[in-house]
Amino acid sequence: MLEKPNDVVKAAPVIENGRERPIAPGTVWHTLVSAVGFDWIRLARDVQNPKPRAASPAEVSQSMSKPVRVNPWHAMIGLFASSLAACQAREVQLLACSSSSECDDGESCNAAGECVPEPLVVDDFEDFDNLPQSAAFAEWLHYSYNPDRQNVAHRVERPGHNSNGSLLLEWVVLDAPDGGVNGTGAGLVSRSANDYVDLSRFSRLLFSHTYADLYFRDEIAGDCISTPSFRVSFGCREYGAVFEATVYMSQFGWDTANLPWTLFKEPSLPATGVAIEDCLAYSDGLNFATNTPLEDGQCGSGTLMLDSIAFR
View: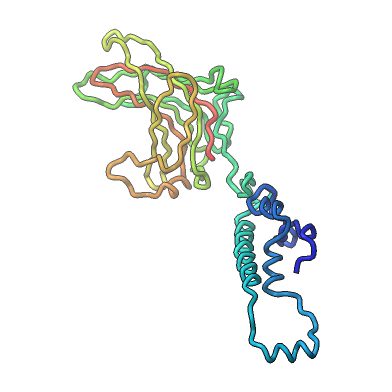
């Protein structure tokens, strides 16, 4: 049985990779053990398997003539201790790491004791050049579509979102007056530097953005209209699929978009049916494109600034 509460304040150690690792401070179990003053795993062991002592001949004779009796308090304490011991064992099992050195390459240990992927920073634009910070992505390019070669430009601009630099895209696009709506727009893209980049270990995309109207009057179309939203997308040539999510423009200062993969859907009809996890493993780049609802012959314009683009 327990001698002194102070003798067993430490939680039961865990042997991992040939070395002892105590329960991490700050966990629920560590707090409980520290508050109560002893370790329930040791109590459960001692209650259920008490240390034997030599019995006298009289005790042996007496025990053989009496029925076995169980002390109800003894049994209750044993049951309670066993339950708490199971909780401690479960918490120890959930504690995957105590430092990043115990995690795989490309992972770090967070405050909850979990090995998680290290963020992949695509670009923070602090170097003021056109190349992303990550070597997995190629240079930034701007474009227009339906038709192409319209009035579109991009550059690294000061300031950023709580930083020195950001990437600015500005556009003036015209839906050709041909009797139909063509879905005209502009965008930015950074393609994968190699055949593909594996993003499957991440769960979301984060970036900062802000929007401002760009006042422009076309001689024929008149005043250009503003753009309410833009699309963020990535594709995978391996499967012929594209997944995209819509983000509304922030016209009153910087905002941060936090986009889990559950927000990304296939825009094509019919959809390919490819799982997003499979497409992420063979991603061919990252794309930002404007959603300007232009009517036939109408003009659209605006400026979009992006900063701190990263996968987590």
